Length: 63
Image (cartoon, rainbow, N blue to C red; front, top):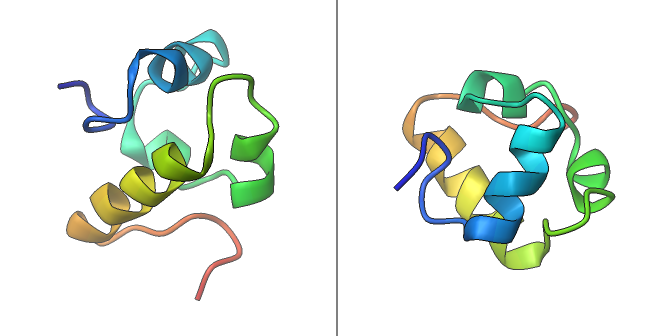
Protein backbone atom coordinates (compact mmCIF):
# COMPACT_ATOMS: atom_id res chain seq x y z
CA UNK A 1 0.00 0.00 0.00
CA UNK A 2 1.19 3.52 -0.81
CA UNK A 3 0.55 6.86 0.87
CA UNK A 4 -2.58 6.97 -1.29
CA UNK A 5 -4.04 3.63 -0.18
CA UNK A 6 -4.95 0.82 -2.55
CA UNK A 7 -5.70 2.89 -5.64
CA UNK A 8 -3.84 0.69 -8.09
CA UNK A 9 -0.52 1.01 -9.84
CA UNK A 10 -1.66 3.10 -12.84
CA UNK A 11 -3.27 5.73 -10.58
CA UNK A 12 -0.30 5.71 -8.22
CA UNK A 13 2.09 6.22 -11.15
CA UNK A 14 -0.08 9.02 -12.54
CA UNK A 15 0.03 10.90 -9.24
CA UNK A 16 3.77 10.35 -8.83
CA UNK A 17 4.41 11.48 -12.42
CA UNK A 18 2.74 14.77 -11.47
CA UNK A 19 5.00 15.11 -8.42
CA UNK A 20 2.26 14.16 -5.96
CA UNK A 21 3.56 12.04 -3.10
CA UNK A 22 1.08 12.60 -0.23
CA UNK A 23 -2.60 12.87 0.58
CA UNK A 24 -2.00 16.49 1.57
CA UNK A 25 -0.90 17.19 -2.00
CA UNK A 26 -3.90 15.28 -3.38
CA UNK A 27 -6.22 17.46 -1.27
CA UNK A 28 -5.04 20.53 -3.20
CA UNK A 29 -6.50 19.11 -6.42
CA UNK A 30 -10.07 18.94 -7.70
CA UNK A 31 -11.78 15.76 -8.81
CA UNK A 32 -11.76 17.10 -12.37
CA UNK A 33 -7.99 17.63 -12.24
CA UNK A 34 -7.45 14.10 -10.95
CA UNK A 35 -9.66 12.56 -13.64
CA UNK A 36 -7.58 14.29 -16.33
CA UNK A 37 -4.57 12.24 -15.24
CA UNK A 38 -4.12 9.12 -17.36
CA UNK A 39 -4.58 6.15 -15.04
CA UNK A 40 -6.84 7.86 -12.48
CA UNK A 41 -10.46 6.78 -12.78
CA UNK A 42 -13.66 6.82 -10.70
CA UNK A 43 -12.56 3.93 -8.48
CA UNK A 44 -9.26 5.62 -7.61
CA UNK A 45 -11.13 8.87 -6.90
CA UNK A 46 -13.50 7.05 -4.53
CA UNK A 47 -10.61 5.42 -2.66
CA UNK A 48 -8.67 8.69 -2.49
CA UNK A 49 -11.72 10.49 -1.08
CA UNK A 50 -12.15 7.78 1.58
CA UNK A 51 -8.46 8.02 2.53
CA UNK A 52 -8.59 11.81 2.63
CA UNK A 53 -11.65 11.71 4.88
CA UNK A 54 -9.86 9.37 7.30
CA UNK A 55 -7.20 12.03 7.88
CA UNK A 56 -9.62 14.97 7.93
CA UNK A 57 -8.97 16.24 4.39
CA UNK A 58 -11.07 16.69 1.25
CA UNK A 59 -10.45 17.44 -2.39
CA UNK A 60 -10.44 21.11 -3.34
CA UNK A 61 -13.96 22.37 -4.02
CA UNK A 62 -15.69 19.70 -1.97
CA UNK A 63 -17.88 20.52 1.00
